[in-house]
Image (cartoon, rainbow, N blue to C red; front, side, top):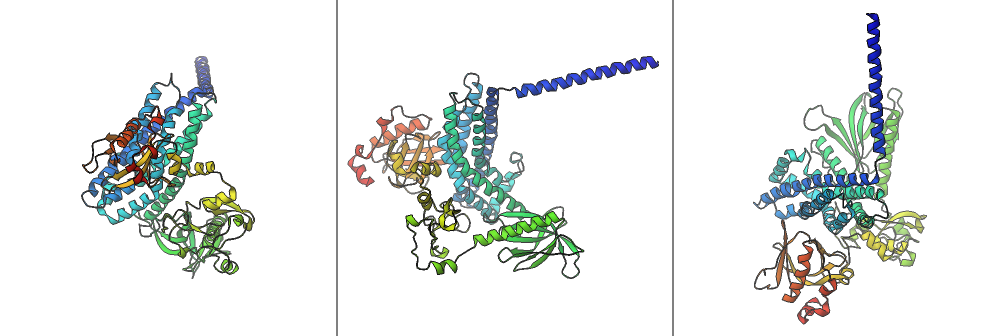
Length: 603
């Protein structure tokens, strides 16, 4: 029996070794196959990932457009709150949804079915480029939309109820409206990432290389604007979380507030030095000193003291009985705190000191030193002296609007900044440049766009690339257009207004509208793909009118004569189908070709 048992043991042991050997080599073979995956297979995977993420993205757009937007607009039309508020919140989400659901997604699905014969995606993504203007408009409006959602959630019970009711639905995935509204902002960087990966796997002699490279250049420009909005939204989301943790009592949800550090800490009592558990939230402008609440539901902390960063001092203290202590001394209160370790103490002191220094730098006024030294200096520094001598700063209270773009300042989304080269007060957008200034030891300083161009010597082509796709000058596109002329324009029920309308040759699927032929920035752009054209005159007073509709967007136009109307319709009928004129020069409309009545109206 012992011999038989030994034989059985040897047999099963040998069988186990064979099985183990088989599993090992199977895993090794699979790994080798994976490592030997060709670039062609990798490109197919990237294209398939693009398709699958596009499907998920379209479902989110349907949620925003077809559920949130539709239900809130329906309630607004009953008089619960202004309809224009809802339109401002959701901006042009309907146009974005229509493009992706009706055009881009079907194109990607068709291409994946034909991948064996047409293995490329660059040509499809290049079609996306003209429609990035829609995203530019959405991203530009994003901060204002977040503020409106917060305001009307507090102001209107019906508004708050509808949003909360929709957020409970399974399709929302326990996410807030603000989270879903971030999806379009995040989508463009996603295209950029996938396209970069795709180009790395694509041979430079590929037929798709040129289209893919051009698409990446345009998408990357738009992605930079989206990334800025994403960072703001992530900060706002964190502020909302803290707002709820504090029982919605502290007014901290403000785009200007930034969370620096948070964490548990012990507070030493003033009389008997007993340690009490506390929690700190450090922001860029204040320190919230909180007491934990032991509750299963509701708020987690209550704010005991709000200490301003202005005038705050940090003192390292030594207590043999209580190690790792330091003191926070502010105008409102002085706190002696104990960290959990020496490292934790150093991190808190470093964070607090850095925040104080940053606050002091932001609020530096130079009123005494600079005013005294440069009181006789002219307001404007000559171009030859820009960056070589310090300017006299224009005081904040002397201006109400940006001295460059003329947009009015406000406390939230358009705050005041000073150009370190000329001293002008400008908004964040016009001061989003940095240059080395000689008078400040050639350190990088924030300057306005005009000074940046003078100091750096920026060329026109470089400026156009920096401006991106939303700020093309009228004269630039009018001189190289499929068609351009004055038209009367009306959006929904707003009054008619005169607009200089242009469809550029380079973007024959997009209609630009300017206030005048020499304007440097378009009032609006309409991506024409997917619109329905109605050429029936709106009224007897406007016999040469026509209308463009898509979902909830309605745009009405009127020409001065029937001939001009038909020329516009010929181009637009092609554009709404995604086609461009074969012979664009035949359709070019300029001032010389128009009748005298049109010429007089355009002067």
